[in-house]
Length: 371
Image 1 (cartoon, one colour):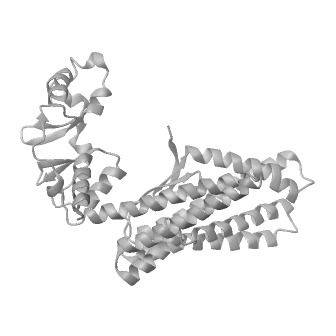
Image 2 (image 1 turned 30 degrees about the vertical axis):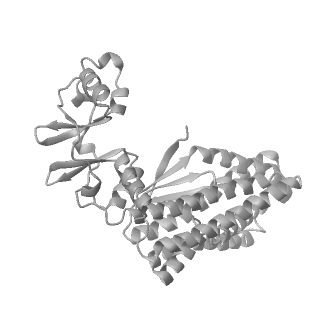
Image 3 (image 1 turned 90 degrees about the vertical axis):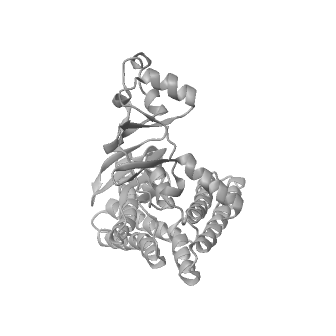
C-alpha cells in the first residue's frame, strides 16, 4: 500500500515524500554515479561519483520543491490554503484547498512554477561558470542542475492539462470565453493529445531497442489519466452548482444512544437495519458518529462490554457543514478529508447527514436528466 512521510514544514506547509519517491531517488543517484559523472569527471574515484550522484539527486528534488513552493506561495497570497507538498515518482504536487475562481488567479498560480525553474536554471548555470576553474566537480553538479531545471520549466509549460502550461492555456481560454468547463475541456484535450504523442514516441524508441522509451510511456499514461480526471472534476463541480447541503442531506438518519453496547449495535442495527453509519445522540444534541469501520476496528471480545461512546468519533473531531453549504464544497471536503459522511448542523442542532452515496446519487440523477 502506498504511503508517504512528513519530513518537515516550510512556511507552515507540511513537506511529504511519497514511497515512490525513494525509487526515483535511488534510480537518479545510480544513473548519475554510473554514467554522468564518470563522463564528466573521468579521473575521479567511484566513491566521489556516488557522493556527487546522491548530492545532485537531493538538489534535484530540492529544485522540484522550490517549483511547488512557488505555486503554494501564490496560492496563499490568493487566499487559498495549502495543506502539504508531496514529492513523488514524477515530481511533486501541492495540495491546495480550492481551485482558483478567477482566470487571472489561475494564470499567476500556474506560471510562477515554471518561472521558478527558469530562475534556478540561470542561477545554477551562473554558479557552474563561476566555479569552473576552482572546482570541476562543483561545476559539473551545477551544470547538470541548470539543464534539469531548464528542462523542468520547458516541460511544464507544454500546453497539456494538468501541467502548468495546460493551466495557463485553460486560464486564457477561460478569460476569453468566460466558460470554465469549456476551457477545461480544451486544455484536457490538449493534454491527452500531448500524452498520446509521448506514448507513441516511447513505443518508437523501444522498437529501436532503446528501452528508455518506457519512461515516456509511463509519463504519457500518467498525464493522460490526469487530463481526463481534471476535466471530470470540473464537470462534477458544475453539476453540483446550485445544490446546497439541505438538498443533499438525509433527514431520516438512524440514531443510537451513547451507552448502547457494540454487540447490540451490530445485532439490532447493522445486521437488521442494514445501515453502516449512525448518529450518536445525547438527547437533542449530537455526540458523535459511529460507523461500520469503528466496529471492525474494535476487538470482537470487547463487543459485549464496550459502548458506542467508546468507539465513536466524537463531535469535536467531526467535519460538519451548515445546511447552506455549497454542494461542490461538500464533495471537496469529503474527498480531501477522506471521510464518508458529514453531519449538517444549524444553530448547534443536527439537521441531517450527508454521505458520499447521497452526493453520487444526486450526480447520477442530474447526469441522466442532462442537468
